[in-house]
Image (cartoon, rainbow, N blue to C red; front, side, top):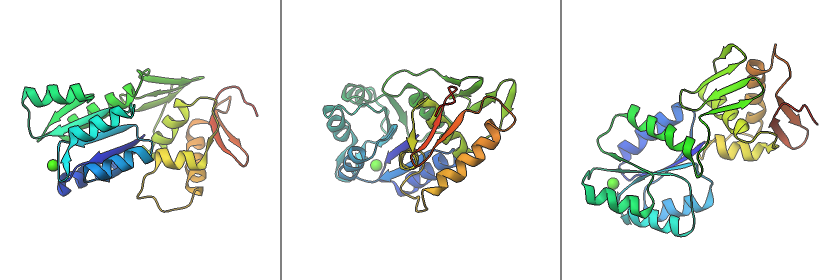
Amino acid sequence: MRILIVEDEEKLAGILLRSLRGEGYAVDAATTVAQGLEMALTVHYDLIILDLLLPDGSGTSLLTALRQQRYNAPVLVLTARGDVDTKVENFDAGADDYLTKPFAFAELLVRVRALLRRGPVVKASTLRIGDLELDRMTRQVRRGSQRIELSPKEYSLLEYLMLNPGRVLSRSMIIERVWDQSFEGLTNIVDVYVRQLRKKIDDGFEPKLIRTVRGVGYAIGTDGAP
Ligand code: CA
């Protein structure tokens, strides 16, 4: 899941960036309406966290511009102004949720998870492939009766695979959705993480769920082919 933060308050943006990355999300940051718009239209984001008072204009104008281009990722608006008019104006402009500053990170996180689950269309809170289950609200993973502990990045990788069952995902697609602009390594990071993930969800279980498609990438499914 890749998130864009548009926030000009350096300290708050920094805290959000670090905290959300700590949860395993890929997170990029913009500080102006112009930069936010350019990034949103370049990279596929699953969620935008948008401040309303930006140096070159209002977050509302950015939101309006995105919705006019049929941009349908959920948008969580952040602002110090908690008045009803501002809320109504932004819901009208296409905001999906609203958080008034100051807020507790725990509350932001609950809303982020709920919005990511909702996405452009409502998705089930639990993803299932065979006997593998991933709960997107509690972020718990089980195979059969066994609880599986994953690191935040392993979780993000598995979630991306499970949201696309049977579809072959290339290393660069995986990098773009699971890692962010801060990532400067090689695409073989994907192979390293897939290996770790396999150890946890496939070793000792049948059938094997993660498939390698040589020269292309990876897929998850129960059909075994190719
Ligand atoms: Ca601001």
